[in-house]
Amino acid sequence: WEIEFQTAHYVDSLRLAGIDCQGWNVEDWGYTCAAWWREFDLRWSALPRDLTGGFCAPSNCTRPHMRTHVFPKYLARILRMDFPIPPPDNAEFDAREMSHWSRYNLDFVIGGINSCGTTSLYTNLVTNPDIDFTVVEEEEAV
Image 1 (cartoon, helix red, strand yellow):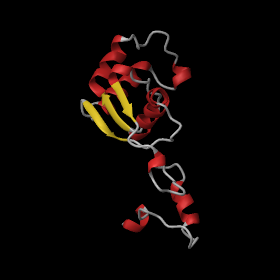
Image 2 (tube, rainbow, N blue to C red):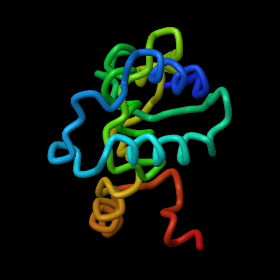
Image 3 (cartoon, helix red, strand yellow):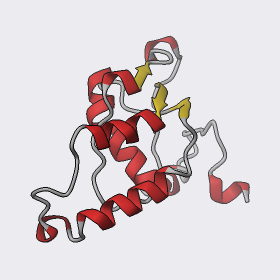
Image 4 (cartoon, rainbow, N blue to C red):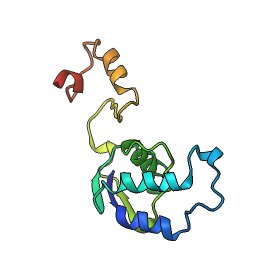
């Protein structure tokens, strides 16, 4: 997927949408609402105003699913946030499938992100002489 995300507009829209401390239950979240906003502002201030890039996701993901489920979880993980991030509005987020898998002559693909088990899978599969890898594993590249 190719992603375009307006980070500054997203943060502003969260504030205008009324995501505030009314009804905030510390027992539900594990921290105060004020602490949530401080941490949120600190981490998001490191991002550019507009974020564009490539993003790998399963082929059965749709654009709405990318916006509401996959992308917010991915950003939370990348920014090391231990709290959920609300999904962006349609105006703040655009996703386009870069290419369809059927256009590639592949028998099998393993794709993943940090800490999702791909290194363990690689370690086991590399022992089979009938399996080739297109990219050198990161531990071997160092």
